[in-house]
Length: 334
Image 1: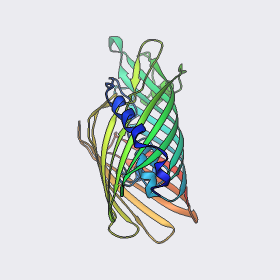
Image 2 (image 1 turned 120 degrees about the vertical axis):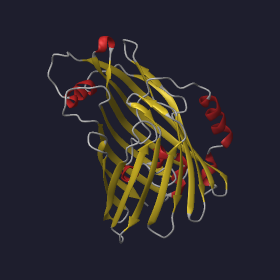
Image 3 (image 1 turned 90 degrees about the vertical axis):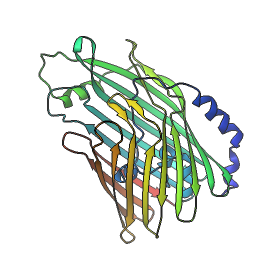
């Protein structure tokens, strides 16, 4: 396995990471770390050290080496934050994504569509819906550093754009309708490159991982000069595998991200357990260490459709009028 992963010299990866890390992050950020992976979301996002399927290209590129020789995932995910049945208000948010990935030990490829829409206070105290929509094409490469330590990098080409939609304060509509109107607005797209880097350490029953996403903090603007950024985010994960079929994990964001919905720094605990050969259940809880710090719980399961093919699903719910999300996915592996 190590010989296969030597296709990418470390000397080519590290300089790119160093140069990219010197580029300062921009304000008005959008899109959080945990926007992909039904299995990961079923563990409340405690997945950086668990990532051993094809969604590792997003969560921790180095995690591809922990899975089988080849794997594939197809997933759809949707989140809403806040009570969307009331009139529009600042802070209401919706997010959805579609993600397809194919991963092997030396290389992975993926395609994703991401959209985040948030209602904010605009000029003269009016309300506006700001939406960032991106299409992402990615290539992931692995490099063995020493025995049990792997470096992975995901190079991303993004086509994205921003839209800003103002609302007439006299118009009666719900926050849900306002978000939909903002999400459906036309955008002028342009391209940008970005980079994710991950490190994974493997021991017999313990894994530790670190991921830095959006090293270059790609930014997108609309014609009025409003900008939204993919924020640089660093996350540490630790996973324990005490027995076959049981995984316990924790994740901690290493920095605070200024998302448009407020400051965000997540701490997550999760686990999954196999119940026989055809069913896996998982659950978890996460907190935002900034702001209200209210817990958000998650549950999920996977059902084996046939050997090597799994149907995944998850549901997440916070306290009333906070995060609610769900997703489904299909996962295959050799």
